[in-house]
Length: 453
Figure: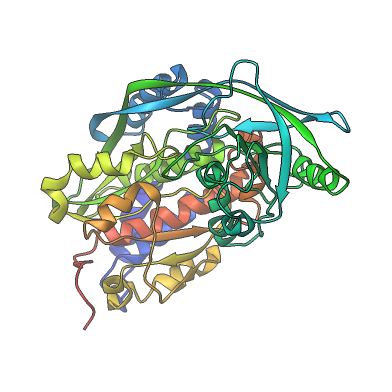
């Protein structure tokens, strides 16, 4: 009944100021705020599959879940595109202060870390207050030591604090060059609790056993080291599974007039293993699938095709390159790309390709999104998601939806990344922004590659 009303209102309600169909976009916006598709999709994924690290049995279950979900939501031309990658598998992990003040430490191994010997590593630590301090140290300065970098992360709305802090997670190679036998890093986190945050590690060069510390434990080690030598014992077990079969899965809402012109959107279905991957990135998968599904329920689809991709290896890389390789022959037909991968809290800013920003067809977009408290920025997007980097680098224009990341890095890559931290109202705000904006972009005739006059 709802979409019958949309069809009728589209006939009787003209919007003379713009050629774009803002009435339908507004109806999509309002309907999305009360629709439960994203929530039920996310609940299903986190309950029935859980955490989905690449190469794991849960990852394989996620493939079947994805196929069933896309089918149920009405997508067509559903495809599984496979690629191979060695995958890191977590084993048992522990750490403790042996002397002078015995104390258990909360740690989590970082992806791609080398394992310790079976009996572990026991060594004195050296605590550095920043990653820059590690880089400034001469080669061989920490021979036989466990290096600890205790650099806090700054809380920001746009997530820029993460970009500034995350190089420290890749400090194991630099610590190894300076003689370290293991590397511990303060979790890349804005939280003050003891839950450690995982993530991938390993820059070019030497590698040593590497783990993240809970934030209070990193501070505790600094306090202890200020009093004299501190000895820590570290045990990390892990293994590499060679040539795991990974995949990108996609489904489409076919365009009504220009079906060969495609907008590529989505989220990544892989996740880290401590939690259930709700905000990273089950939310992005659910938001983009729900937005496209709602558009697919319209009496008439927009002109261009919307393709939703569940990318299969973002956390450890590979899905962006694999998707680009599989679609090189249609790059000129991919008119726009974007990804949802910063949780489920409210979108506060939208960035469009310059050709869209300059077009009169989108002059009404700020008014459309104003009730959702979204800024339509005059700036062009520089980054729209790790999984569309390959497409963007190949010349495909991108659109960027910026989530409020103020609390995202309290939970990111932790055991607390669960459905419990997702706010249904904010999740629906995401769907409303994506659905209404995506509809206008897909129904447009604009060449988003064109340079504004």
